[in-house]
Amino acid sequence: MAQPDAPYIDGPIAGQSLTFELGNRPWQNPPQFNTVEETLEYYIPRFLDSDISEQLMDVIEMGIPITTIANAMQTGGVMQGYHTLDVGILVIPVLVEMMVFLAEEADIEYRVGTEDDRLKKSNFNDSTIALAKKRLKEKMSEKEKVEDNIKKDVVEETEEPQGLMARRS
Image 1 (tube, rainbow, N blue to C red):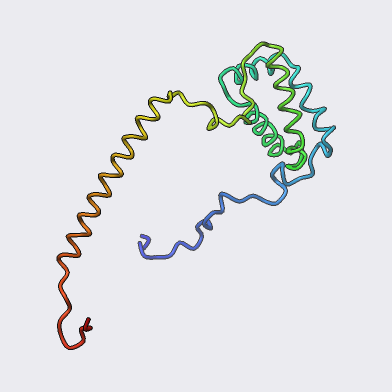
Image 2 (cartoon, rainbow, N blue to C red):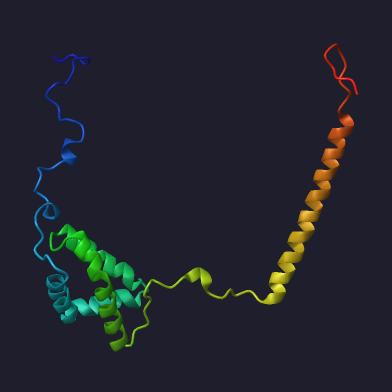
């Protein structure tokens, strides 16, 4: 019978299941495509494949920004060892333009992903904004009144220091 306090010497090292030998991962080996041109020759025929383009248009139609799709494609290409990260970053603008072209040809509304949603015009009219400002000013003035009353109470409650070390006025 084994003792419960005995150390387990033959056990796995912590994190051992998370490590692999160097070179066993596709991104740890030299890439299949070394230049932007070679990489584009890999991606562009895939856009022209009808099955892939239909799926791509479905994703774009769902409202996923095209830049997000392009980033996912190039990240997948890096992880599969097709190209390096720097080549993938250089390919992204071409992938975006290709998807924009395909979406326009299919007459699909799309989001590129470079729009700044914060700059869109608000749905509030001027009277609603003016009313909100007025209420905010009223609340601020009430808060200032309460703070002034608290300060007066604190000043009134403080007594003159007495004792041997007290300062004389």
